[in-house]
Length: 138
Image: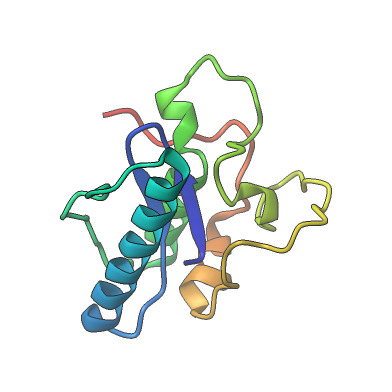
């Protein structure tokens, strides 16, 4: 997992995987771990995670940049009146691709550093991300 955002009723992730099998295995492991943690916190049992997810392979720097904006700035789509520069329920605090850098957080990042060229460097060809950017409304 390279980037994430937790919304009220869904999650967004940008992940790197060797292949479809590795992605499926990773999603399965994450869903089990999340369900156990949520059920433990809420003092309940049973299914938490829906049995579906949408996966799309990113192929170009521009497509990857749009995906990063979509994941990290998604709260602006759901909460347009929120004036915070970034979503505190996302990995944005550890992201180093904003035009105006955030002060470093002392906490260790909850994500992996991107390993692929597209996710680490390639997307930057189209510019760093500004605080005013948000996913396009549907």
